[in-house]
Image (cartoon, rainbow, N blue to C red; front, side, top):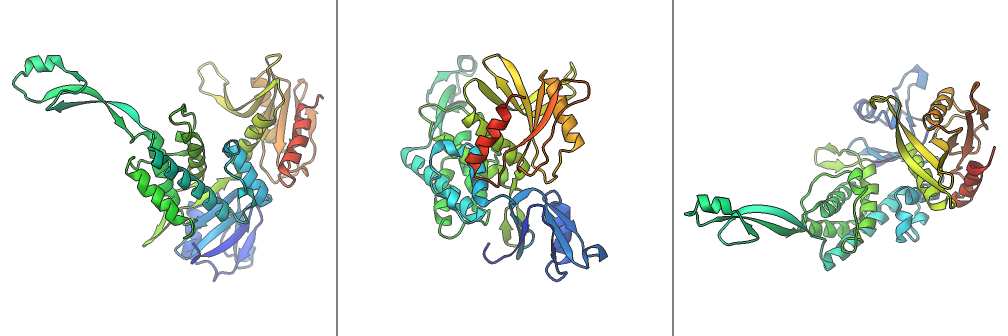
Length: 399
């Protein structure tokens, strides 16, 4: 990674580069394959003959060629980005991130987390990886488990007996997730020689016990943990972080590197949900991505960002829609969207949540209805916990 030239872009801030800085073929590749992450304006009179690149709400690294890549920087303070990631991926629950929020760069944060994961996998390997019993059947020269008596009666001359038995295996999804994550990390290009040997050692170790099978961040969610595999929970939380942000490989000749990209709009939604789960007072509950069917057949449905429940009265207090946007005024489409969510949940209040306090305040009743739509902020430019207290006060304030 250190041999590459990196061009820095800050979220939503256009930056121009001379035609000699980016080859036409490289710019075309960026436009074709990463247009969601970066808006590309080719050299023209409009751009004064220069390339104009604008990061579109993503943070991380995009390799474009063997010697050129983009470094997408957040508009929020880097320390707050790290704290958002802690909350969003529930890493804060496991108390192993002391000092990580003081990292100077996203790459440093990435490789420190990778080192934590590798060290935990090696530690578990010394104890023995978790195993499960798997049902198997085979023709055996000895009896194991339960014999197939029907086949034995029909094929009495066969010296091999079909048996049904259980095998204690470590090649299970719990361990396959660890192996695949280390494989992706080792190819990311974001880890220095100081950390990489530990990652490779952990990868070789787990690969002796688990197959290399592609996994995704979704595979790390909703898993069952109990006494024998409880220490897998923080490891799978870390795996989810790495797998959610890692894109398809970019390869050019012998050069290989994986994009590492954080979708800030999605991260903001996850962060708000988890922060509320940590900090809501008793009597309230937050649910994320709640599906609501609009028609009886379920062909039309909504996935509401967040729904706040009053558990004392067993009612919906309000619906929330997070908006990681740069506009200074709530858009009409956003207002109508969140109002529709309120109607679907049969509640009287809808809230638009913005990442900056500079958004123009909005507080209106919609048409002739008694649905109130208002805007509040969880300001990412402020201290996270201080901003959270202000946000929570605004959210729970009575109209």
